[in-house]
Image (cartoon, rainbow, N blue to C red; front, side, top):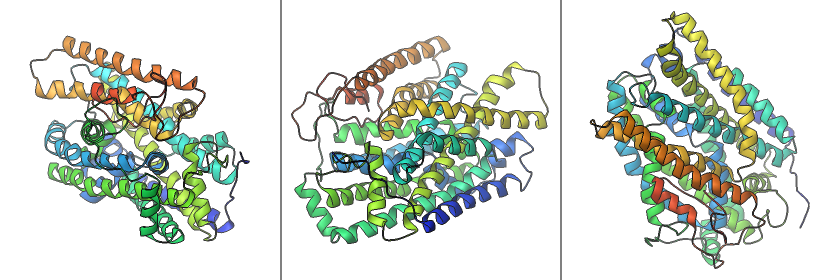
Length: 497
């Protein structure tokens, strides 16, 4: 096995990288100090309900598609084939249902937090905080890992630097949304550049497809009803619907963007607009994975020891493909960092909202707008500091794509069930809701944490197409109705997500 290979940035890469980050910060600061200068909670937390369709839709996309998807999806396709693409089949219903069921309910209630009218509000808020904080750790760790692979910059130095930048950036929701728009464009540009150059170097798209077919990486429609299979249409296309409902239907960060829209119609249209964007992102991730396979085949950089983990493979590939084109590696790494900054700042804002509306205001005397706004900003600052500690936990969870989906699977499923109970069964009471929520969480955490612990003790992973026992991880899709992308393994519950 070879030594770890470091492909350093050129001067042009550093310049482009810094310029893009400065531009992101500049956009955020401009909107933070324009208009009413975030002097009211309405403006700080909901952008004064003044946003139009395009920025809201791109912000909805960016919030959960940043560095995690860019690093995770191509590695998944490279290693296991294109079956993962069938997740796209879930996007239609997964966005149509929130647009016509969840958005009208939340918008007409004039809420700031999705949990204000919940019959188990406090427990829901704590779950939301737990899920968001852990997810922030994953998103913070992913691009720092990428920078470490590319430049050799100290991993935890990068985590600390980016975490502090995110902590200081508390410019309100309008600043976050408009920064998301710019960063989404950068994300598309970075991925597209890699795909075009990589495809050209591989001999064209036909050659890429041929090599992927010869390597058994092109997957057909698998209708096997067995829930223990790793990836099938049912676990991806059907189970993925419930993942999308948890993300785009009841998640605080997304609902907060709907509520920032000028009208209910604008909020619904922004949800519709996410559908083609999601399909483009998924397709680009799949294409990048196929181009990676066309370049390396079965001799992956991980197997050769050029990188330390699957999540570093994409950055190694990017530097390998673009090493003779100064500036493009910097563009790609900048898209990872800018996307992560966007996601984390969004999470800070949403966490500050639920904490203020559901945990503080109901239990303290009425406060002035100025004091409430200042407290919201301090809460965002505090969550930024907590995020740094969560990055260490993320480093222990394996693949960033696996870790992100693990979090949403263990907590998002039971929370979605709780919201559906309250909306569709008005005769439900708080006792029944709490019992159902706790039961779902116990089952989810038993599978999720148990498999995480067994994974840490596992010594090796089997390769693709090896005869294995059923993948118990995908049983979680049937149990929690959420997506699973666990790797195949030989022992019971060795891996989850």
